Amino acid sequence: MPSSLSPESLDAALEKSLIGAPMPSGRRCLGIEVERLILHRQTRVCAPLEFCRQLIADLAADIDGRIYMDGEVINRVDGDGYSLTMEPGGQLELATEPRTSLAEIDPTMAEVRRLVESRLAGTEFHTVALGHAPVSHPDELGLLPRSRYKIMDRAMTPRGNLTRNMMRATAGFQLTYDVTDRADAGRKMALLYRLAPIMVALCANSRIIGGKDSGYASFRHHVWQHTDRTRVGVPPGCLGADTAVDGYKRFAREAILLFLRRDGELVPSPEVSLEQGVAQGVVTQDDLELHLSSLFPYVRMRNYLEVRYLDSVEWPLARSVLAMLSGLIYCSIATAKAETLTASTALADPAALDAVHQAAARDGLDAVLPDGRGFRDVARELLSYSTATLGGASCRWADRADLAAVERRIA
Image 1 (cartoon, rainbow, N blue to C red):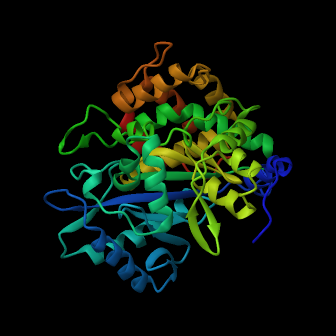
Image 2 (tube, rainbow, N blue to C red):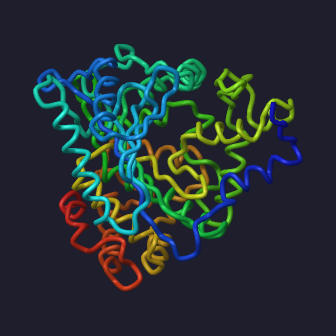
């Protein structure tokens, strides 16, 4: 068995895993992961899990990609510049390789959409961009028989009453951004956390739950607020550029372990924090990597930054949001302006911060910040920063025209 981490080595191990291999200076790529629900065309109930499993098997044959298995379950299929996975409740996910511009992602999205639509043609089901299943109850949905998911389902549910909704019934889209060093990671992470309520509202797309109006513009975001609270949300310290990395490390230390790898298999861990597990001598470097992959804050850190707080929306809006955020995160003038504008979302009081996120989930762009500014007005101001910088010599990841869908959304 590999040697266990010691309390003395934990901080250095975390630093290396989280920020020890940043991207080369000057590289600023874009990555995206898009999840889709598979719903009945008429009733909008979720497709049976066996149907979903057969779909990804058929897609694997279509693309002649490399297949990675977890027991009898297809874990991932690699295509040309992208991968397909099946999420715990049968949601289909497409992840692209990092690209240097938004335009480079479009052909991959179009190709995968064509493949999926071809496979689903003539069936009762189609893929839908929504943040949460609109009809099916999570308890009615299956769970892919992977050890990871079984352990998560059993261990996390007592610490968050909507954990099963998160695993089985939600779908989002995730954006990834490069970082070049520790300071760069802290600054970008803090801004992405500050932007979270506004961006959640901008992409709110999960109002109908159980066939009825849930009262939430983004029920998905409400779900995430009621998932295992030791591993979700905004880690203390992550709203400030100078404290974000250390805050994230502290968050990782305090989160409850879920599983360990023993003899090549995942097994449930003792119900202790990472720090306690290291003190007990049960955590290896591989176990640390597993632990970091099981943290679900709104922005996750792994030598890059992964934005996880957005509902699944149709691709035209998703790509427009990616363009807007790329301007705010990668263009220095827009970054500085956005940092100033979002100072009022960097709330030190956890209850006040939670209330802002609740408002985003409930009211979407009609929500109001504690200082009286409307979310929609703040979104318009942020959009103006990206509009002023995108397409310029130092900000070529997207063009101003790519912002059109966001402009329509906040009009």
